[in-house]
Image 1 (cartoon, rainbow, N blue to C red):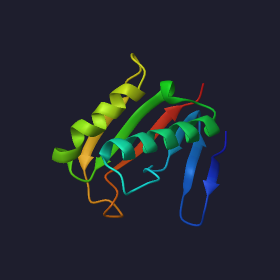
Image 2 (tube, rainbow, N blue to C red):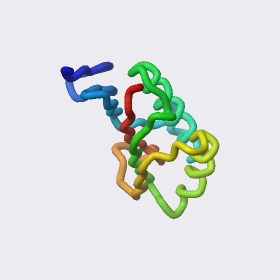
Image 3 (tube, helix red, strand yellow):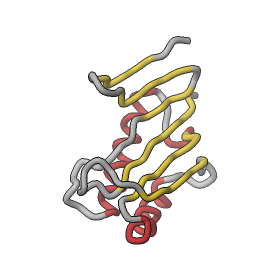
Length: 117
């Protein structure tokens, strides 16, 4: 199986599929003038949309890296949304780190790897 790229520009692809694995570029919310809960929900909505486009869903997520602007201020708020979004019994491998993100208004970014059915 070759490498398939979707939603590609000169710098990156939003989706890359190879050998039954889906890799998503880091995702952020659409409205950066909102708080951590809203940005997290928007980010998760974007991830669901991209996973659907790639032919899979959140039940097949293998791993997630979560980047938070301020882990002390945002960890609980992000987790409150994450815990409602993720179905029981399918928790992926996960790492959460504090990071300086590409725009100061971005509070959370998620990078996802998932399996195809």
